Amino acid sequence: MKNILLINVFGEDRPGVTSAITEVLSRYDISLLDIGQAVIHDQLSLAILAAVPSQVNIDLVTDEVKSCLLIIGVGGFCPTRRKIQTANLHGKISNPL
View 1: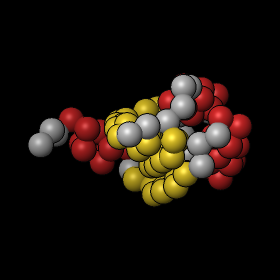
View 2: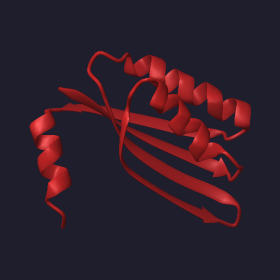
View 3: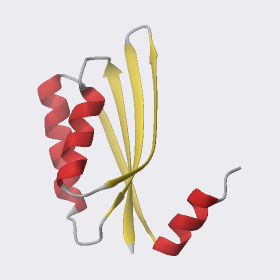
């Protein structure tokens, strides 16, 4: 099984936010499944859906992402997680709406 992590980031837009988050995720061999963002009047709303290998401590990952966002100065961070079977994951990705 893989853990699915949805990272929601919001706050004032700053250079390097996406880069900082994905750099943390890459250290743990985490796969990006989807990413979306909007910037409205300099306010960022960013969502990253990621597949976390089962052997990775997901709490450690979210703590590290939160720390890097605090350094950058982005205040809002809301992680959501759940476990799904890999077979379901592939089915959801390969069956577009």
